[in-house]
Image (cartoon, rainbow, N blue to C red; front, side, top):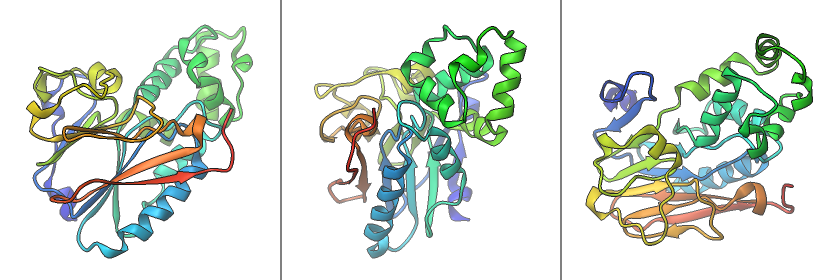
Length: 264
């Protein structure tokens, strides 16, 4: 597979225990980057259908880059992870980055507690999608709580979240969940920056020499600037999930799936 031959795992350049950082030596023919899904499986399935139809006119290698935050807040986090574990749409390579909500989920799974901050940031909805409630862990020891979680959350889901890279770099683009801290080379960006930093419309990423494509900070409409693109349109609250189509030498184009309701 051409993609596997030219995608380099950069984990050797990161601190021990950090996520892989990936780099491709050339750009694919077309990339579709998808913003924060947050448990909205219906919107993801709709958006993938739109992407598949849109991509029919492009020949060559096609990527579907997921920008993280698959879990929490929306109703079907478990379903989203299961969907991402399945084969991608025909003709596509799918790459799924880690988001800060995946990081929080792993932190909770390692040390479950009713007082863990993740539960108040959408973790309760994620547990419900696996058939659990926060109350199911009440009064249990850490070992007992972990046993229930391990029996309810498939190990493949946990491995998927653990293995997700923190950044993907091509000759023209940097894909990351949250953003980059201005003034630091990509190699010096911490994993916390990649998963948590919040740029805004005034942030200038020109110095990186590449377009930075991210989510993490929900906006009413996608932000398309020369140096960075934010495509998080708050799917769980707005029932609007957005992707951006990137073709070298052409302006970015957004696609948005919309639902008939808003998730609570």
